[in-house]
Image (cartoon, rainbow, N blue to C red; front, side, top):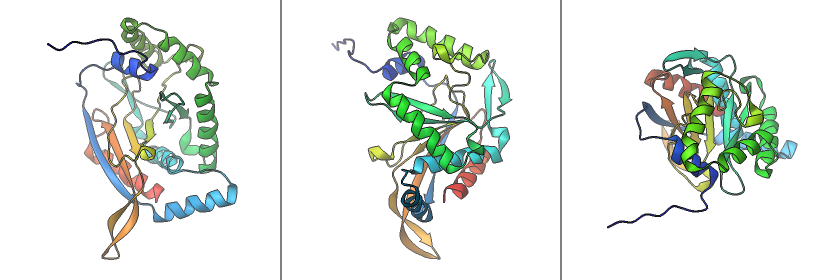
Length: 262
């Protein structure tokens, strides 16, 4: 007979995940696009040489996603009160990061569609640094609250956070509960782990229509001028909320993101 015992020394995110998600019931659709980033890599190298700053593909994709949603503003939506669709006035992109201890967190870049690439880089770099050092107040307070909560209280506490942040739209960063915490879309880079193709689940607290994984740039066969050639290709893997985005609309976003990235 199988026996079980509690897992000790679990990360804060893992404890939150175990309490937050139920078995799958929500509608999601998935898809990926391959983007030839030959010119993008040249641009990144020139930017680094000129500024001495570490621009990455994540920064490029973050800005591309923001501009894609700005181009299609009706898709920048969330569902409240069990079924009412509301459109955001701002395009805010949440960039996920792994902290020193292996926990997951991230930073929300507000008004990302109106920022140039260097400002996106500056904003994310500074916020990521504070998050990893534990000096970001919102991150520190939310992790302190959730990390010290017994497992049997996590589900109701997360439900309350969802109500406060998304239904009531109260802004309580001092309690680790900012309004609309994940914004328009989530961008996560898994390329550093050598991941080729993967799709991530939605965080119920997020209420965003799209979650995009940025994979490792790899040499892949592409048709160039009628001939097959090896090119550096970025694979972008998307998870979409089918209540807000269908196949056609996902295609609109994919086309816009591809145009902005390459």
